[in-house]
Length: 127
Image (cartoon, rainbow, N blue to C red):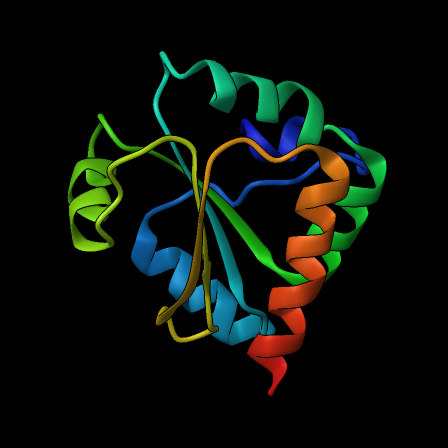
């Protein structure tokens, strides 16, 4: 399994369908972070290689969110990208535990920028 094969410090992405992500978020009472990407996107690859591999990002995201990756050109990803109006990559989306889109960020974020976003949206989602 892709996401769960990483060492503990890296982001562990949930494997499964969108409906399974929603079930997991409700079960664990956590908001959802979704990385909408494509296989050809350079900034997407860089985020995977650097930002999502960062220990601080991994620890925070794994403890506070259900993380999910969506390839916008394959399978269910095509419909999800359309539903959530994803037109640029990467698009980083923050959902409440019920799957309601709360915030959307577009473009590459380094580890520090991304960690700040995670913390900011976690506070907003908790309100």
